[in-house]
Image 1 (cartoon, rainbow, N blue to C red):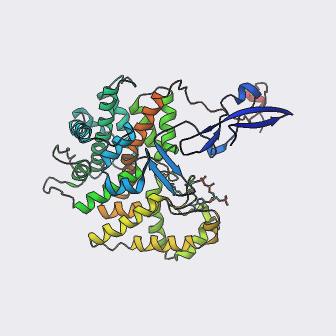
Image 2 (tube, rainbow, N blue to C red):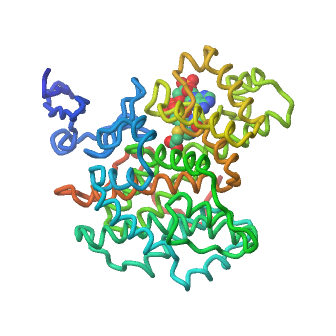
Image 3 (tube, protein in one colour):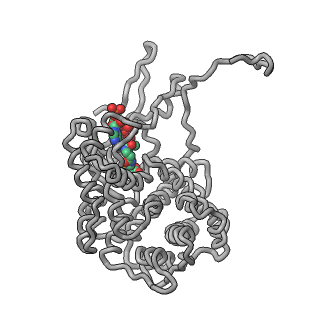
Length: 430
Ligand code: CMC
């Protein structure tokens, strides 16, 4: 196979190197194209653009494969804890017992918020969206935590990573508690990552919440499945902000904002809203699918489709099974699960979805699990952010360790007015 691509422009041939990844993915390196030809490439929505070389996560969207640092997601979902997966993503290897214990201790030591930060929650209106609170609090945390973190100082980085991973749970739970007018519950040093979060969410002064193993297992699984997904919208945002040498906290806070939208992390909430609307309106799933196909009011089948997967999202398969078994073990019958199953079956048989290779994605069934655990709907995307934290941190680290890393700065094709002279206001006509 050739390692050079040839491009003909205005009768002249230019040679562009082809780079090959460790899974034999190939890409044309166009970094010298503008200098050589005066032209840039145009790729609206970056659908065909590789923005970096990365050794963290591998996806083969046609085959439905997802691997973190080489390990298949199916194996990690079955065998690993979220904290272990975080260490794998951030530092590249599954931790030894010593490494796991050390990091666990750092998470415990860094779980509580600085005392002064309690007051920040009072500054938000009670109906503030938890994603707004989360991004603002993460940004604020830098002022209390490790100021002027030196990106390549490994000890400082590990401390900041542990602090963020640990405190994101505390902030998430505290924002929920202040939203519902209950006292903030502080983390407990004797509890594991997932249990500690559930404790902070659901303990009330007169009742200690102790999650069942099934609930902890399901939440751990969800976090593992959300932990990274290569250069998606929020991770690219983290890298973009980091490339300007913004600190880790600011970069990750920007990732939270990018995740918020319904086409990205906000889809888990949008799926349940969609199911509720279908139920409330009394239409059949077939009628809803027809509305989607007819593009009525721009309605989409939320939780379906993916830029990279043109096959089953492997995370969706695992989540669907997990939703079934969690609901069974909790003896819950959720009509939304039945509706989701029916909607999936109708869509998967429909020519519109088949021809466009649209399958359920990670968000289609995750909301069913979150509902069963008792997580309120406006916290769903916060849960996604908690899960994605290791991926964002790993990408921030990788970017800083890339030799010769430059600021991210895409170009554009300008389509606006050509040069014109300024006109006094009296003479302006519409
Ligand atoms: N419902 C109806 N039609 C769809 C859907 C959908 N969910 N997704 C894609 N299509 C259509 C789209 O209209 C287009 O049709 P046509 O070629 O006739 O114009 C075709 O399928 C190709 O889609 P696209 O818009 O070019 O795909 P994209 O790669 O730009 O967008 C997506 C990917 C995930 C934003 C989109 O599939 C979507 O909006 N899905 C619903 C929202 C959702 O579930 N998002 C979560 C994504 S997974 C987790 C995450 O990344 O956060």
